[in-house]
Image (cartoon, rainbow, N blue to C red):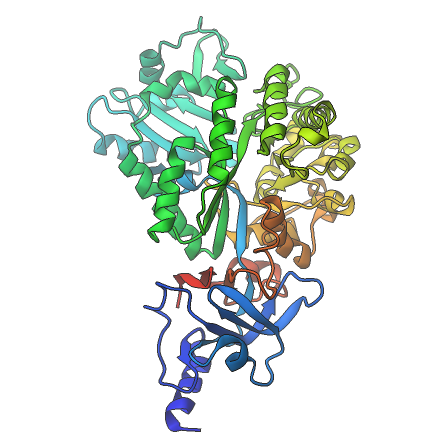
Length: 575
């Protein structure tokens, strides 16, 4: 062995993930990302999400495809990677099939980095302090918009009010969106500009919260937020472009190789395709576009056309519907009243007549339907609507014989409805981090009995359903480590849970891995191309310094993302 070669191998072992040209001088991976390189990866556990070979020692890649998965023995690298392949020594780090967030909002993830971020707000006073800074930076009369607050852990134990905001901002309209995206608090200036008074009627699927005197508190729930939409800062094309790029860069740096992007503006699809083609977006994007019932035919036609657009990273073949609101703001539609609000059963946001026409047209066009449903009433209604559509439209008229319709969130499900997901072929798309946040207040909202069907991952998997795992960022952080931890531990980030959290609903590490790899691939009709490390599949790989499959709970949260590879190209190099 020549000295140069020996030095290269020692460097690989010493500093971890470096690329070494087999038999040549040491070189870094940087600069080789413009085309799919040939790679040979070994030196750490390689989890495949393939039941026939759950763990491998080595993977070879050529022209963006996996050419070898197996033992680190013999001349596998030269044979399957080629003599010019670059060698990645994991040095104990763990590799996985590319992790996919099966429910996020890519533009919202980017915009969160560009606007008033209220994620870590700890109280009404803290909210006021952050708003005070924004006021000093805003022009007189300019609308101040922020997002990310959630009051469930605040010492005040209540929603913020217009009076809270008025104490800081009187000359600027203020719109501060709750983390779940299903409510906003606005100040008096915003209410006046929008013409909202105590006499204003709440729109269908929305609520204008009022105080004991019948005056608006400033809290607008679900569709009532649309009343202040005209006050929102303009989202220009340049700002959208920046947000999509920032969101994709952030996600690659966290170890995600793909996202199922929800509620996408159909007009943004050409931009997203263009950004992927130019290399500005380096992760996979599976779009589920917003569908407004009044524009059903036009939207489905556009989605059908978009399905045929050839793009290596971007796929558009689904639409997003909303059936109800969120649990925290008491907008989730329940079969019985809220335990802490006995006159309220939540809000249905979609009428049955609208659902029928949309679902029938979607079956005939081959469009995937992904419907938001959180409460047990909403989940039952959506399952009913899906089942009725499947029976109503003759199967010979289905453009896609395996439609793989989804219910996004599937958070609170009556026990009688749990087996219906598998029976109907409906995919529950769930976000584990919701559970470890919501279960601090869900017992108050639901009472003990309804918790049995809340965030019921174990029960759904045992019934034969598969779960497409996601984060719902920017509602949540959008970190795969948090999602993996939540799914396998069912504890909050400080290690807390209690009997109300039903710890028996947690999943195994092997199931959690599939929730963020193979099962999202199935939920996007891509299981033959991605989702597991198998010969012939695309080379999407996520690498973390810690093996999350064997790590203790807290160690999962600190596992450093080291490398993200998509189509054999580096989307992120974290060394």
